[in-house]
Length: 148
Image 1 (cartoon, rainbow, N blue to C red):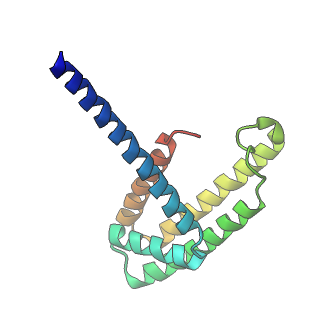
Image 2 (image 1 turned 90 degrees about the vertical axis):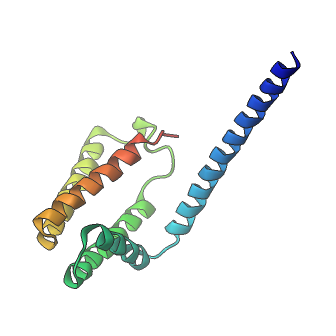
């Protein structure tokens, strides 16, 4: 009986430690995202260009082209985030009409197609294929996160 109580106490304490580290990791991620949101478009583009250079083995001219493309992309994204409605917009479908939803979705997809075509012009075929697979992995990772 004494051994059973010790085992139960051990399992309870072990479970509480696991929950604490999970919460700490979540707080650290939130802190990193808060810090990253304070970076300028130029700084974010520089970091992303360096990541792509490591992943795709870009040359100097490709780096410059991609950095310029990313600066404009990030600037547009930040401007759109400033102009979007407040919280609750995504969850409450009554805030937006179907025509507005169609228009916004169509514009976003057109913009993604344009960005992809520009990347295709900059990168070689193998680099472009690798870039597409990296982007798909990032999208899958984002979609796998639970919605709050």
